[in-house]
Length: 243
Image 1 (spheres, one colour):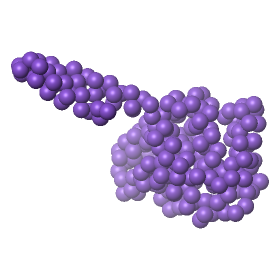
Image 2 (cartoon, helix red, strand yellow):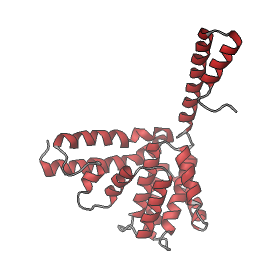
Image 3 (cartoon, rainbow, N blue to C red):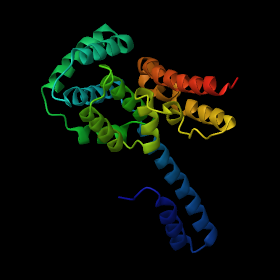
């Protein structure tokens, strides 16, 4: 099997051996480069192309892992999941999803396997959205237990979320000192211009359009994360008197 990125060299060498002319080798290199580029395009577009049903199944398995983390399933958690599904996916999908969730709650969740699949099949913005969703579930009873936080941290690391982005999402749900600055991934010493630039950068990263590949339902759910980002920015603006 020819590895990705090697076609340009293979065709260049092959052309030189056959024709013994540098221009032909150069032509082989150019053609091979086009083949390599097309392979990269295919691989990059394969990521994030999973179906909505696959996305929902993976999310439900993570939901189950969070719900079982502290040894008891709370009614508030079940209510959160049901409301989340009804609001974003409709009644028919919700009925089937809740049945799947019950099965997952009665099973051992292969967390590393689920997270590996998420990491390799979902784009980075979608993975950020997944972490936001499981934070939302964990905070549904207003307290994120240490066990739940460990599962979330494990899932974030295993799905390839960088630490700064993790802390940004965490600060949307855990309002510690300077939480709004953490959401924007800046320090409280940042200038007003830096605050504005940080918000624009984060708005692009967290915009609901980033999850378009999974349909309008998931895009609609993603607006909550965008709203929390905007709330953090508005809080800083009020404190600083930024217009």
